[in-house]
Amino acid sequence: MNAFPEDRNLAKRKRKNKIFQTLFLMSTCFGVVALALLLIQVLSQGIGWLNWDFLTNFSSRIPENAGFKAAIFGTLWMMSITAPLTFIIGVATAIYLEEYAKDTRLSRIIQTNISNLAGVPSIVFGLLGLTIFVRLFGFGNSILSGGLTMTLLVLPIIIVASQEAIKAVPMSLRHASFAMGANRWQTVLRVVLPSAFPGILTGTILSMSRAIGETAPLIVIGAVGYIAFTPESFFSQFTVMPIQIYGWASLPKAEFQNVAAAGIIVLLIALLGMNALAIYLRGKFQKK
Image 1 (cartoon, rainbow, N blue to C red):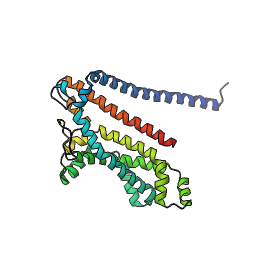
Image 2: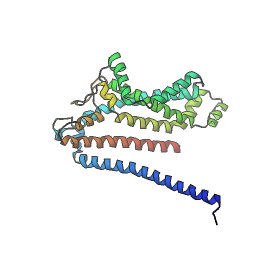
Image 3: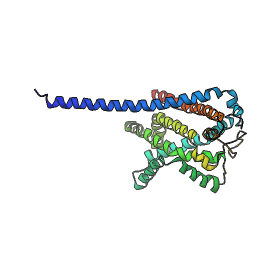
Image 4: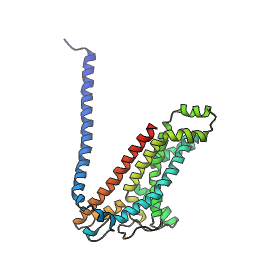
């Protein structure tokens, strides 16, 4: 006796579900295995070269004396410009677009361009920074040029993340604030922003992680690969961790591959630390 059509359809759906579940599991395992192999290779090459001297010495032509100090300080100086500018401009733009801008053709054009800029290759922002900050404004290949270029790079990401966080705030909270006599700015400041802050903060930290790991824009604006001093001002020449790693990896001497692996470990620790901080802060503020 033939099975009922409903039973055949149920069995067919179960087979499809099993097939897609297997495909998704294989995709996940592929990514995890590739990451694990990369980490194992980097750790095996660089862990023996990672010591206090590596963190406190400047780069050198001798692999045993090469250090990461200039790159670490250069990254910190650059992020001291990028982080506050990006957060202030990005959050302010998101607040305007979501809370104040009307649904007009101009606002839709602005929104579309912001979304498109988030997917533009990073080297394009490097060319923009070279044209505007290095040549037009005359900042040269300085930390200020690098920080402003990185601000342009990650600004669309923070704007989009902040907009999504603000959209997630229920309209009922806004209506309740208006009903209590608050104006729009008071509602934004005391109701919307506190509710959206976990998402805004997470997007900000993750975008800073991207800025720390970018190389192409900084090479275009003239960040150098060899620096034997720490920056003294925002107009000093500089290098950053990815550029220093790239410089070591391109040298023919085999020991510099191990030095580059040690630099990658330091960079990974910084990136993983920032991601962990984003997760911690998001959970903390969501509980509040």
